Image (tube, rainbow, N blue to C red; front, side):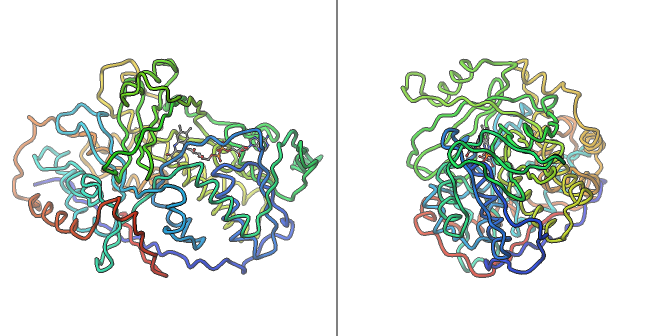
Length: 540
Ligand SMILES: Cc1cc2nc3c(=O)[nH]c(=O)nc-3n(C[C@H](O)[C@H](O)[C@H](O)COP(=O)(O)OP(=O)(O)OC[C@H]3O[C@@H](n4cnc5c(N)ncnc54)[C@H](O)[C@@H]3O)c2cc1C
């Protein structure tokens, strides 16, 4: 076999930090008081991280939340990085998960995005240590198939997470199993907000229910204070804008420009409805392609969260609601649907003057891969890192903004790939997505490399695409969507390269499954986390 040589796997070690709050490290003396405006998930996650990192160094953290403006109340799925958030804060799963109706998440199943035979659905797994036993085989086979050899290259056959999801098992192995498995969570967004609110106040964060009516600027353009209806004028040295799509401080007051992604991510609306939880509780998110977008299906302990994300340029709100109700068998149900608008894109500067934008105020890439909470977490963490370096001048802000923007663009390009590689022909929406030429040069280059049969690993690793998603995810999306030569054109392997037995791989994964239990059973008795847990994730 003459397929291009698979890249070498290297190990990325991720070790959970101990929960002790930091009291060392410098914080610029000009920052003594930080006011967070907004009490949605972004506001409370930011408050928790800042209180943990800066509270012990004497920085006062407060949250101002409007009693009149509700939180967006969606956002029920996470990436695995949320584990690090709770661990850093020393909050056990057995404490927060039951209070937030949370479940474990093995990954996301994409159904009906591709019409290529054999590739009508695929699973985007959270890869982990155990997958190192089968990852090389997957990458090798994907490359070989791209080069015309008839070998198995569907990602679902190679990852433990897809096996777990198929069997509705939780990704928590028994204690004597020597491999950790990476996972994310599903949760009730409103309950997570309330949980974090309680915790933050316990940890010294000040809370004021007040509606901000004006943002007052200094002569030099910095933010001096905010005027509120209930609490008068509130001054601070630094402001964190968590006001959601309103972007009250970062956009409206400071005039930070917004870069729209509407050219290549068409969806701008959503409609959501819950359904009751049945007997069987899934352990993954479902993302099913619909006529003008896609539907999510998220299992919580007490219900399913469902929603249809669509483009208003192709479909009306009524049509979308009808299609969602049809799917859920709720055409005649009195249950009300919630309609939402989304603004897709990002601000040019997430840190502008003495204001940091976190959450929907800084930007949003549609929820297809549930990445928004990760942006919140990373933005605040990287801000703390920058403060600790002691420099909050323009150069430091530019460096910070450059990093956050790369993360946004890399993630955006990954999400765009879902749409660009679709082969549905049933509506103008899908045809427009497949034919869209307004995609980044980086992504065009990556497609060209994949189509040439060469490895995409160096390209992903060397530029910003890798800042959004690790290389195995890029392999999964191309292979999972079935971007290979047509089946009839494939030839038998010629025996010159390695050949892997799919029966052995299946056997290995089936035997591994014996160390896991069902989602419902695991949630009934969540084990405590070991004090120091080392997690290894494989990238190239
Ligand atoms: C359809 C959809 C699905 C999503 N799914 C996911 C997902 O699966 N996973 C994921 O990670 N993310 C998801 N998200 C994103 C996620 O919901 C948000 O990132 C997250 O909830 C954070 O929102 P936020 O706190 O920035 O804004 P919001 O929840 O809108 O909070 C804004 C806060 O600002 C306050 N406020 C507003 N104006 C004022 C004022 N004048 N004075 C004082 N306070 C004010 C409000 O009271 C509120 O507390 C989804 C988003 C949408 C639209």
